[in-house]
Length: 105
Image 1 (cartoon, rainbow, N blue to C red):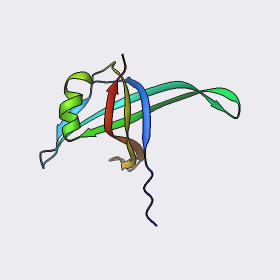
Image 2: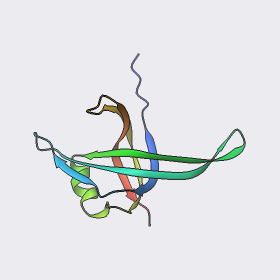
Image 3: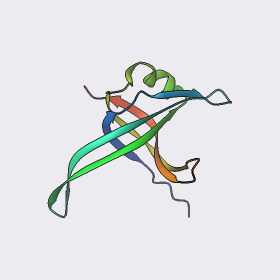
Image 4: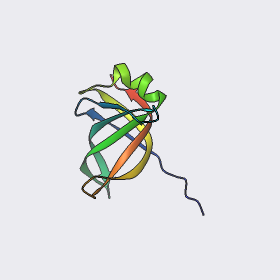
């Protein structure tokens, strides 16, 4: 059985200026950190939800949307799939691979 459901939508504030790179095959990539803070209801009680999620944007989306509208301090809504990345120090980290980004005014 192949599992296919992997979708996350998260709103938040970009913490640092996005880092732009181009892979050896010429694909543009952009990485930034999104801070999310909200109140959620769990078991009938209100609780604070907070996270910092690394986001990667690749390909044409990186060129078209990220080039002008995405910068430190921007409020955005990001959608995409999540995947684990292994860092150089062998620790794992969840990363949101964005395929849709909208700015919040």
